[in-house]
Structure formats: C-alpha cells, structure tokens
Length: 86
Ligand code: SF4
Image (cartoon, rainbow, N blue to C red):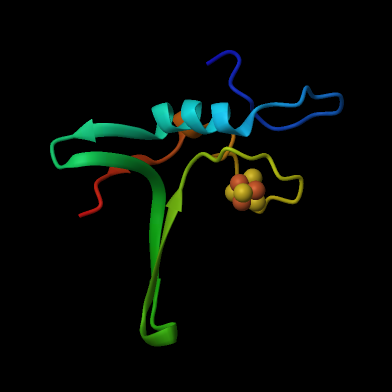
C-alpha cells in the first residue's frame, strides 16, 4: 500500500496503469457470500432515457489531471462499501 499511486503531484514518477489496475482490484473487490463484490460509494437512479442507474465505483487505474472524481479515486480503501452485482 505504501507504493500505491495516489494523486499526482509536481515531479511525480510515471506509473504503470496496468499494475495500478491490479493493485486497485485487490483493494476494491472481494469474494463475498454472493460471489464477487465491489466497493461503491453509492447508487443513483433517474427516469431519463426510460430509466438509468449509476453506480459510483471507488478506485481507478488512471490519474487524469482533469478528473471529476473525489478522493475515493486515490484512497479507495477508505471509501464505499462492498456490493454484489445483485
Ligand atoms: S477521469 Fe475517469 S479514468 Fe480518469 S482518473 Fe478520473 S475516474 Fe479515472
């Protein structure tokens, strides 16, 4: 966890997004009683386009400068709860 790439600061070292994806996967997923579960901070549903639903997943394997996400991207172990697809 100490080497886990958090937010980018001036002079950051380039990182491997594939490796970060593997590290993130280890943090945000687990095998629960209903199978594979993933961490989300919440869910949102609106009736546009005949109904849509959004799941707010924590963690990401990229660190886009203009990212709209909050701290749950860089500190996925501190945010959200595990949910199964069900
Ligand atoms: S913009 Fe999207 S892909 Fe880029 S770091 Fe944010 S959540 Fe990840």
